[in-house]
Length: 240
Image 1: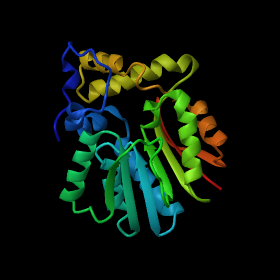
Image 2: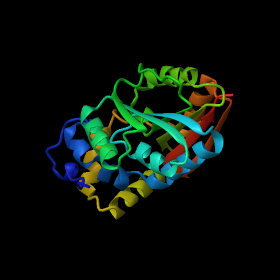
Image 3: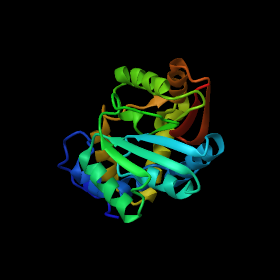
Image 4: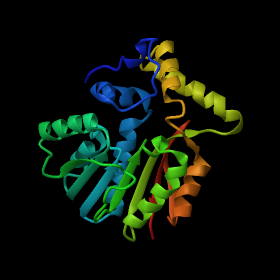
């Protein structure tokens, strides 16, 4: 796993993008930047195993290098799985396909380079959006969630994991706690500040209430938070 050193240089002026440079270090970046990353994947596997039938088709929208689907294929190997990763970043998908081949998972895992706002979602039992909606422009986000609702059958699940905005007096302290977490992972003050600047207006988080409203207004009858860490939250939504 290559170490993320992208933001160690002060000459970075472009907005953050999932380019080849990011793809090379993404697995290290996400493990050091997203609290409870592996815990959330384990929780997703448990939810899918408890709620859905033995034959299971899962789409991961914004799948990046395929880590989540690879872990699901391992944790749910007693199921008949069809796991499909969708991303518009070819460099990420190249990594994902290599990892799937390395772990001999190409029989149940496939990856497609497509736009998540318009790609087919045929026979979906569950759809994952892990740290993905936050990169979709807010005016488009509602239409996307509506489309995901329509793509799911009765009893289908949408799982959404997001960076969130805390409200009121907790807003600033939660950001500070997150920055402490990143320092504990070995990121410097320069790297933290540079990445935050690069993500400005690229990653646009909602509050917990805004995310829940987005899901409920799309038609999901039940919405629950199954994991939360300060300014990160994971939601599961059921289509009745």
